Picture (spheres, rainbow, N blue to C red):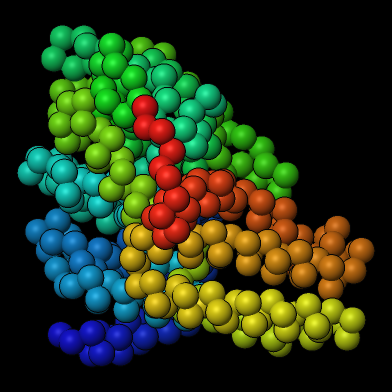
Length: 365
């Protein structure tokens, strides 16, 4: 099936799903906890009809098509304002890592269950004292028989209160520091010794959590990739994350059309036009980058800054009452978090300086 033929099938499927009320509205990279049931139903609906894991192997529940076909799916979902999947951490991060580094047993155990939403994932990477400095993590996995026990504290774990499993980074060799001696695990969130505390945001929601690990067990087959070699696994995962976070060019252009038609008061129209012009340039950059990891930090930073401009414009145009309680209030309160999610804006600037401008690299641990 050619990508063009597939696009026609996708449009028909999405249109019918919207008409039937089964399609889940787009919510970006992080699923709001209140949408869990609806998003789960939508994920299962897509899987049962062959629209989940478009480029995943057929033996693991996917469609077995090309990356271009998967891109078509994402583009059509973005054009219609529909979520392409329910669980970014599962479909992009865990799924990508397992497909690349997993054993046959791990792929059989996790991949199709993830596509069906039988397993929902979260990410246990960041720590209170090692957020952007991920190599400084202190969570430890200590040998216990054939497996390990893990002790530590993780933070900013999206929807951890709903997750069945997590991708976990822990230090397995305490005698070395930095990127060495870290391993990558597939962790059961229902294990003993796990406490999840949701963090209330200024939006009133609790999409993020703090996770405490107190001697939680890990089996030998929970290790993904080489022992002490988890940094290379994590690097590939984070590259996927930074390339995927934020709206694609299609979604951005749809958002700009909505901005152009929002009927802003006259005194705000100049600002609206300036944002639209900037947004059009960024949309062109997103399309041109084509997922290039070198340009990924530039597009991530540009999209984050544009989102701040758009949400601030919306509440300003709505006036005082609209700012307190209007459709733009929650996006405005949410937007500062995107300067942290998927790699902080400071990290993106470092990467731009090193990869695009050729500035000296930061010292490596």
